Image 1: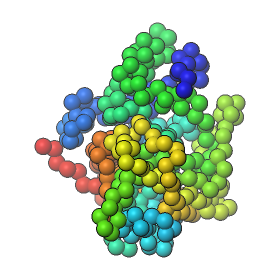
Image 2 (image 1 turned 90 degrees about the vertical axis):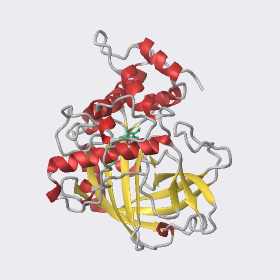
Image 3 (image 1 turned 180 degrees about the horizontal axis):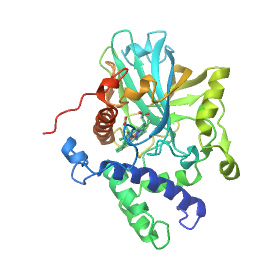
Length: 360
Ligand code: HEM
């Protein structure tokens, strides 16, 4: 693999977007360096600093839309997991498609990172929540790298308006794994539609079979529609909300479909480091298909009051030791509690958030 080209305009453009995304998280939560890697407490995670974005919205992926549909499993995952999601024929799904930027009112063109979050409720009363990005792996091996060190390294130098190459180099020395992510980000295409985007779960989980056997997996939602790529020129002329207008127009015509693809780990594949993808030749199974039929404004839809905490999994699926999962769980829960408090708890239409764990 060639070295990251720090002279290229495209690379700096990508770094600027990354700085904005990760930096917004840092500002929104006023991360302290002490909490990362240990169990989170609200006192450690949050400060009372004013939020940079309007109250009532998610502190990351703020601009989004609720979706609804049905998940239909194939019979491929049932031998590996007792989860009812792999045997119930038609499972109702509440979800959310979003742009990975903090500002809920920003232009869709501001980021090429987009996301899908899903909540499957099965007839045994269990829930499976997930939140995925169109990114194949996490930038760093730990949360500190992404939430603290990367935003610091990518912050624009006031003199040049660009990240300081020396700081970027120091960051890459400390987190060499981030180089492949930055290279990927520098050439990642700008999606013109949610419809053709693949969303990756990135973190590892276990499927647990009836005999107790555990199989480590990572999952992705692979679209049945082709990817729509916008050129840099097209990007200059798209509307402020082009991704959401495209979604509504497509759903007015027909449902959209994604196949849930599970990549099966082999012994020795890392299950605690989301910056390390598994070899492409690992076996894959299609565990089911998601059909999306509806989109509803996030202020009105059922997704508004959902915390898509990826550690909420049903019996038959277990979380791995990946420390990013724990970091995500703490961050999403605090973001959920904050935004629900801001809009007024009484207004929740389908409050299925995870209750706040009191600080120790
Ligand atoms: C340490 C790492 C991470 C932190 C601190 C973090 C933080 C957050 C926060 C605070 C939210 C808003 C949650 C809410 O208000 O409901 C969020 C949303 C989201 N994050 Fe992360 N995140 C991290 C890693 C990831 C990774 C690895 C993925 C993809 C696999 C991801 C995908 C998403 C998605 C899809 C949403 C939007 C969920 C929704 O629509 O409600 N995040 N993140």
